[in-house]
Image 1 (cartoon, rainbow, N blue to C red):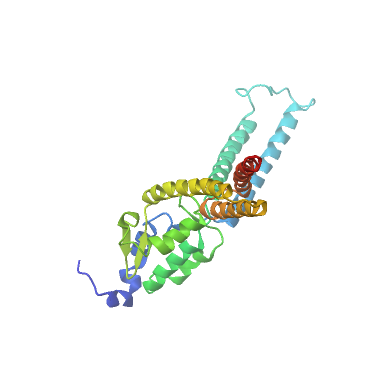
Image 2 (image 1 turned 90 degrees about the vertical axis):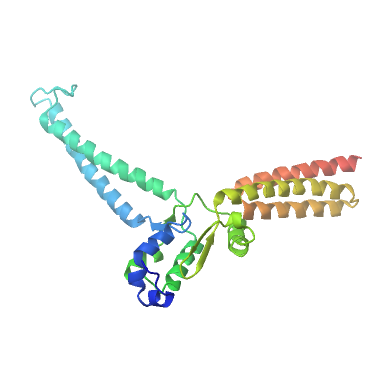
Length: 277
């Protein structure tokens, strides 16, 4: 197949690009693939199924009451094998409806656990569409405006991780090729790094940062005489620790405060030891 000039391709993007290239772009990385969760429709279907099951439950209660009535013929309500055909059929129907309800609820719960698609991901998709002269029908891209878009990425990324990928990884792709080994060029260049090499770099960086923040204030406190200056040093390093934990990790607020409290306790203990000496 001959390769067409770029300008000719952009004249008819719906023919030469279209969904084949769009799907290929979305499949490059989990970060690029966003899809709707359909919250409203899931809730609508679930509450509909719930009401249908509730009506079946009422029918079963009516049958149980009828077969248990003292004026009715004797019916063995303690046997499944000798149960009445009408009640057997109803229970079987309820089991089918419950299976549909449970499966949909479970699958929707799994979808709810997926992270919401970041704005950066949506921006990448819109940029790709704009650079390729909008090869997809506009009406079929309305899903990008929905509020229930999710991503298939492993999880949310910290602020420092996003800044690293945007301003360092993309701009130094030639220098750090092992961090940006997957590229795709379709009129523009999209550089995205593999998670494993980036995690390998980040792990020792976090270790070194933690060691420096633990050791540095001890030496600074040792050579500082003024009590107010020492308290200022402890306060400054605690604020720095909170900033690092907030921007570099996905820890919850109470977890960050617990770490900061422990860190502050270590510095205060050293301060007391220095005062006694």
